[in-house]
Length: 509
Image (tube, rainbow, N blue to C red; front, side):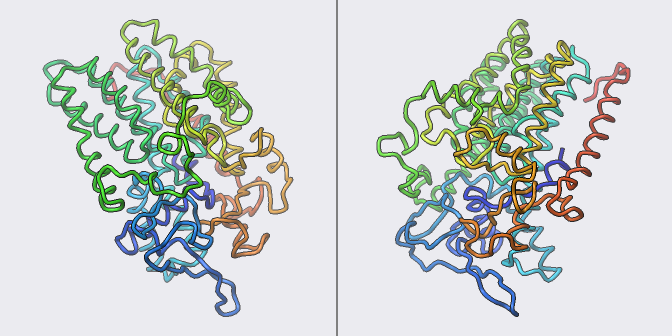
């Protein structure tokens, strides 16, 4: 899975660029403000057009006064600019970026050059979000085994592969977005609680640690995205249901560290532990009569579009998730997993309601309903029973889903919002309806907020703003996907074959 996620670099965009700016500020200057990393301007060096980073004068009077920054996802407080997001992604990616930049500096690379910026962003993303996504597939496998111990390893592993390759986990594990870490942290919290549920009363220390770890995982999900806060009460209710008051206190104690991280970040950047960056973002992002400038009452039509439409439908882009309803129903039918089934349905419902109440529910330039990604694991946990009971139908749906996700990841997960059928749009590009080639079609660099503001359309720099590793051999060619498909095919086949062998009586710890 990590190979699949590291294979692709998706180029720039407002959300990932603002996070990368803060990562660079943390690594380069030990600062949280991004004033010195927002602007890049063209210069000519030795006859070659290059870019130069330009620091903003302080204090910045308004976001509207910043001339063509590389992102619009910004907040302004006391003349200093920050991303208008929670800090989790920046904190996660900064160590990886620091290592990558240090290696590049040893090799004599200029960290502000277009090539260094692009390569550093790619590797830092892979070693943060990509690594979390790959490890999350293991967490998913363990959660599925804990919920359905009677199902053999073959359907379990098929479910894990499908979760990693046949859902939005695939494209969004290749970008510096927060959705995948949030999904995996919430899943990890749930998995720890499920496993602690089965511990004997004599193993008090292990149960206490598991509940504290679950609380910490749920809390850090909020550090990545504030909307994850709606899931914390649901997990706490489940912890109360399967544990004791002492264990529930351990769950709450686990959330102290992430709460301190958030409070410290808010105080340092916005002057108060309770101040959110949304209060200081650009006026264009805030509705006049909306709660927090973003939310109103949930819209049933929007909810339908998020589930079934060709524009943003979850079941349209990942039809295999419809089969997962079999597994959720199976959890309801069994008394020992009914509480877990209620939690899974509640998780799916709460994120759907929140997304349906969001004024930008369509999520801009994207493939699929990306704001529902935190709920994906709780729906996908029904896949193992589906593979066991309806193997051919579920496998067929999984193949279609994986094909759609590979198409989006290979071409461009940031499909323009006006496109009402992203699959058709991506197929047109993949068929060659584009001068620069059928893959890696995002022309936006990590150093610019609008394409072609620095380098000309069709230039080498623009062509390499996004890429996959196979393009080092086959540039702008569909053949660049063949090595990845070969390795994935061998890996999937080998692991499924191994999982189908007779098991001995020892349980893997």
